[in-house]
Length: 514
Ligand SMILES: Nc1ncnc2c1ncn2[C@@H]1O[C@H](COP(=O)(O)OP(=O)(O)OP(=O)(O)O)[C@@H](O)[C@H]1O
Figure 1 (cartoon, rainbow, N blue to C red):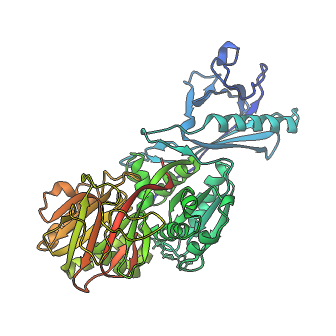
Figure 2: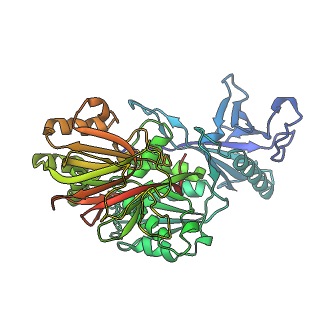
Figure 3: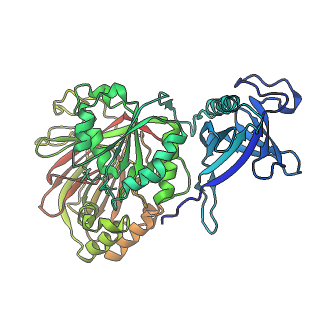
């Protein structure tokens, strides 16, 4: 589903009230009509010149009160305000623009979505000094921007991205249906401008371009890295940061994701963590754009994945083998149809359902294993995998060995979503320190497997009572394919097929979320 939001615009002309307007100040104004206000002013409708409104700024809202009619005041919540800007008016005076993104229900829509609501107020009349009007508008804009500071929500500890900041925006023009640049031009640039976030655009030209860029970038210049693409580009960025000499500091750079691909699993997860109703397409972009501009940062788990060749990659999303990985890679050829490619790929792979032989073992999350539980963990100076034994050795004794050797899929999730519309691990959080391990054993019918994926759209697949589906919360795992069938993916990107093991490292990266 892809519904375009319709911007709302309101234009009012303002003249400073006779009482004047206070400087932005937390202290309440003395006059009785605006007690508790930071600023107060009278405004006149630009078109009719008749309707007079009072604009009052408090710590939590901007109140618009129509004075010459009996309508109740409108309280515009500053928590959903992205920013405010002042500029010279087109005709006369100055203009104050305030950008809100409240949740609103569209006609016939099942749930509210975040929608842009631009409010414009004019300052100055024909007689007034233009420079003075502009200064007044700027004073209002500053006051609104100071008052709209984000709050801590949902009991998660956040630190704020340093402001004013320079943000590197990486766009993969080939991602998804090739629409990422159009999304940047139509949505992202506008939101960053509204929030007054200085940014520089980098358009990737090839595979690994983003990886090379962040590996050699002077990160002191950038306060955050924003990725407008699918999950594959963020995978490159994370691994580019981890390859740096100063990886410990580099991986602390706040990362932001904007959905521009066909899967957009992390973007959908970030939205899910706000506890809002699910959204897709441009509504998801608006939601993630809003969160990015608010600039709240949480911790992000990284999972260290060791491949059979000895190569090591860092993942934020998923490790897949069997059905899910096959669908992901095989459906690449249908990327022109966007997210629907996964549905088409699922139906095609269902038609020729395969069984994949392999050995699976894991360390349950409830296990008391502490650091260095493995007798001789693989040597590594960066984020040592203290729970893993070398691949050529047996797994540590406190691991659980899965008896079954025939699987239809093995899926390790590190975030809630597998794609925009597949809520694979509803309880997962960005920094829960957990691997959400799912596997489906051989013997499941095509109809049941299809039912599971349909239930996954609402995150209810575990309620289906399917005995072939197993879910465990783990901290580390090892998977050893025993046949050549199938592919393996990490964060949706194909990796070498063979024995693999993984360990979660809690909250080592930082994600701009909610
Ligand atoms: N200009 C480019 N041309 C071709 N490939 C690129 C370019 N820029 C980046 N890539 C590569 O494209 C791959 C896919 O990118 P990404 O995952 O961001 O998009 P996607 O596959 O469309 O999205 P999703 O993973 O959500 O399906 C990545 O491996 C990345 O390295």
